[in-house]
Image (cartoon, rainbow, N blue to C red; front, side, top):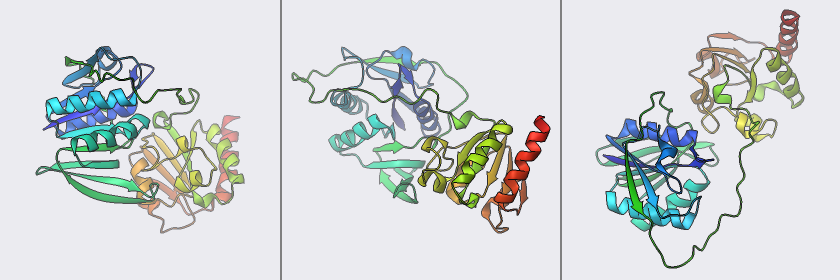
Length: 314
């Protein structure tokens, strides 16, 4: 089985999601190629792909029309069983075009992927992540994969064989032009790297409790995160959401305040080292996964917790 991974670059470096895709592809197939377009092969020198495909004579930077033409030619030449894109701006640009041109089925917003007997099966988020659907498609197929669906391998491989492909000359200028890019805030927190997280859920009550939780998080040297209802309400930004539709985290300590523990949330934090749950509902699913739990009202717990932390710091 052969898989091609389209590599997204940020400042000339493969993104974390691209590394996750290569790792996931490695677990699914015996042969994995990485397409690094608009850059040289050195951009992917530690991805661990068997081959790194680059385009000779192509312009630098992202051009959706040119990239779509290059990818179509690469897939035509190599006959891949799966082509993986991240659910990113470029992935959403290129995946549907490639699927249409090559008459391949397309599965989008995938959170889990399984392959067997000439078919691919994927769990996908629908309705903004509120529901999960499972779909099957015959191979070959194109997948758009969410961040966190695959774990990035800690083992780094070499660049593998470098294969140069001549840029397809269309004879006409591209119909599209990249005008500008919106880069992630360099000061934004990466919650996947935090060793301690304090997560607030619907059970915290009012928005005013967010600031009190933030103060507690600072006192315990933790990052403040939230479940989907908190982010949907606009109380915390999207980059601080934990769960299937947010980020998968694995901190040493995860303190869940007023979090019921829906399956989508548990999927994002179930691997934490120590899980402490505070919830008034003794039947909340979070208690089935917590190492320590207490049926206490968050409005009573937070002030006492802050006071204890302050006394310890003092």
